[in-house]
Length: 372
View (cartoon, rainbow, N blue to C red):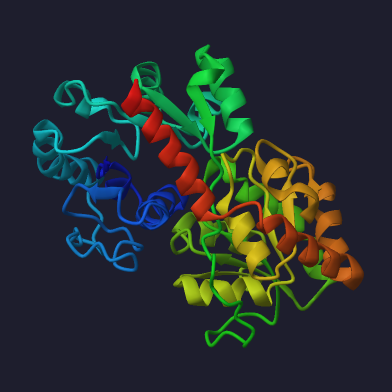
């Protein structure tokens, strides 16, 4: 059985959970069936930081350090020129598009396609996206035409079924695996300049991620704990607006941004007082598993899929309540016993999320649509 994955998310994301999901899934599909499943990824140009690490050397950088109007759509259109002939040729059993552009439908013929739904943010929080954003429209088209749908959490399935009035039998919940699976925890101090005592925020800082509210909420803690800082790992360098916000808040020396590879990120997790995820909505939340695997206590928003993924291994707070956020942070700063308990529970919870299980359950979905 051959599975074809298209270029879409790799034209959109330089880093992020969705592109990481597909790059982890592809090699595991090959491993679990001893080579009986083959995969192909279409496309030629991308600035995604994970592609080289996973051996996809056919991809070339696309003006990586330059930003100009229309760069994203241009990159997507160029990659379509490489993807469409492969889809039209039909030398595969199942197409698994990596995002929601329905461009492939008129070239697919009778081949089945499986669609992964990562979250329902565009439907639930439309105020965070431009009025001309096409994701909701495109997603609606594909949701109704897909032969099967994968949702990455029960919470995402619940929202999907409710909003699109789907038959629940069409939607298969398949959890993601741990991005740091089978890697030894890193115990030595990191070798890049970083505060000695810090709370860790990972990834994108825009809109529903609730970053600005989080920073305002923890600002009083800097007076209570003078040696405390916040480290933002990944998510791109601070913008002018972010620097201005920190300066106006009088805390520009207390909040730093670090760009790191996986090895450095493991160390950053391991040395943190805690990882905090104040997001208003997550379809899954891969950084939760990263924190667990690096012996880092997790403080999580009590919204969407995060309690489902974190289980009993995290402290939860109301992401719209500043005192709730501060109380959770104080708990790990002041109570070493609580901190150690969270670390132990995190390692136990982590055993539920392994990539071979993700691949096995995904293979089962592929086999089902091939038999239909």
